Length: 362
Image 1 (cartoon, one colour):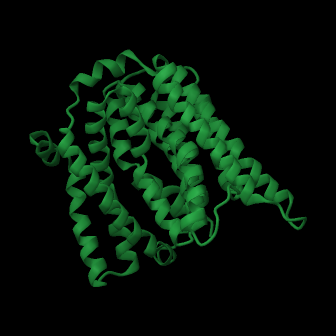
Image 2 (cartoon, rainbow, N blue to C red):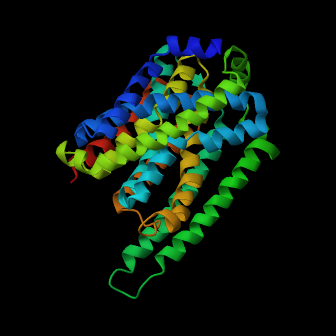
């Protein structure tokens, strides 16, 4: 409990938690406009994601590498998952698709690019596990193929006979889930040595985690609050985005992924500045792979139960190309196992190109 209190006092991101009760009060009293609720709920999600991330680390540290890795893999992207589920429930399938593509690209381009930049400004050259980066990039290429096939089939078959797009998407979703489960077995069991580094092992002893009991309580409370706040956010996202002149594509691709991954980004940036770039690469590329291989097929399956219409894997052409070119950029810049600040600039410039394009699209 002492460590919990110290973290609350010392980390400004937790202070933003004051936005949570404000959002709940305004929602229950119907006192806030759509735009105000949209902005406040975005702010409230950031500290909740931080609480969730720290609680997961506290539990994982006490359960061993295998179970701890599985917990991190499952709960690391819980914030985005809850937002996606809330959007699915309201039938905002295009927003979910844009957010999925955006989460993959944001984690791999923006988070990794900022890590390279911040670490490179302090250290001339930084090393990281090249093999880990190669495996994660390969997983993202599999996802690009999995999403491009139904997208191309849907485009080519327009005006022709009916294509069983939902069945194709469900079949691909099941295959992606299998690939994800096998990747966990590969990385946590049979070839765990591929994902280790001296830098990561040397830094673990310096980290302070919350006691398991405290972590479990915080985890439950944070997850509950995230579910409520995400529902409020999704309720106002359409009207608020229109009033602010933002397209749903921009909100889904840029804003939601950055807010949902805020806590992970802080951890990745901090590790890079401490010359522990393997941790940064693991967080950024690992999160991208989890969203792509686990969260995406899960949303397809859940849509059969909670959404007004079934979600397929036919994404808009622009999103597919952004996902593909983002993956190519990450693969090309990480294939040497070394980074400099300028590689970070290159990654961020590609991300900025995507952001500017989506901002001016209706």
